[in-house]
Length: 341
Image 1 (spheres, rainbow, N blue to C red):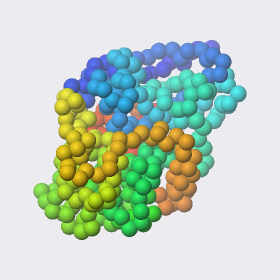
Image 2 (image 1 turned 135 degrees about the vertical axis):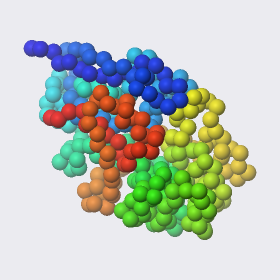
Image 3 (image 1 turned 120 degrees about the vertical axis):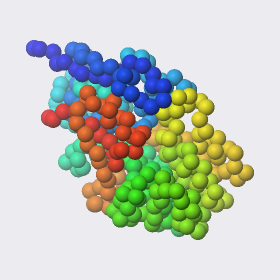
Image 4 (image 1 turned 30 degrees about the horizontal axis):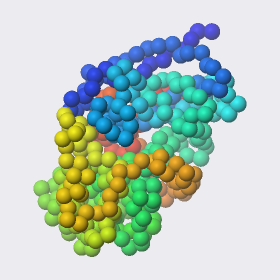
């Protein structure tokens, strides 16, 4: 039997500022023979997420940096095409942390590999609204922020994969939701389609005043994904007892020296009365994954939870697509279609 050829994308050099195609290498190798308790997954969809940029840097973080020559980390959704495991059968669909490659061998005890059902919701949504992205939104708001009905929630990157879900959950539980986004088109989307109470374009020359006009009652919860000027502006409006779950600060990720940037922790730390704030990880709430999954899948199936995906094609173009996350040219959850079944 002819062995399958596997295309993967690896880290060639560490980015110095904005990522570039020269930071990546393509590698073709033979797929290894399966051992007992392993499964071979054909990757169909690949998730692109901002956190991957941090792994390309040597700066200290919550996760070890990628090594030069290592496959770029990522979650994916695919189909089992060979199995030496009693837990998985050929033809079953799974999500796994495959990285940027066409095929992935997983041990059946790997907690990052798990079955999904594309009959419930589209397979791609398990990488977005019904996957890690959705769980980030759910846990960040519901568990980290401890919201109460009637409070005001401000969502940075409001039209993005995480922010759009945060805002919708906020509306569902009775919060006043104000979004911040990078264009009038994106602001119109979150108000008209996602039912936010308002949205402000941070690129407007009158950003601060426009935000102030929507925050008569101040800010109780600020869902932080951006950092920089947006965060500095929001700090003017925090109420006593405010909270700010931090899932990232994308405006700083491509800094030439990430150790010298002003993070949300610096910004909040300089305040006389800072909000209660914490950088959280989805896996802090692993015990509650089923709770989140039921909420998210149920919301998509009922039509209550709306989502936007930007699905592009071709693994070899993943570095080019990845850059879109940091230039604002993507709209919604960015997913690469790797293969057809």
